[in-house]
Image 1 (spheres, helix red, strand yellow):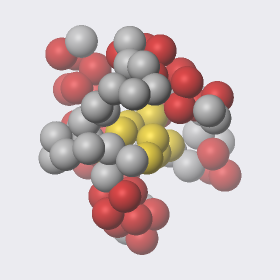
Image 2: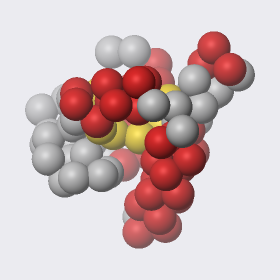
Image 3: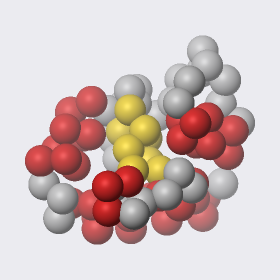
Length: 81
């Protein structure tokens, strides 16, 4: 398991076999996305990691402007836990 995935899973108490919901749609997440890309200095910290479906993840990489929206959604999600 990649270290940043472990950070996300540990923060929310998920196990490897658990259903992990996308923070956007509630569907099964397949990817943990860096909101601020690592190539741009993004860290492997919970504030920078969001669970997404594959389609949502692809959109996030195709349209970096949507990362601002992801950051806002993620901060709300973190406040719920």
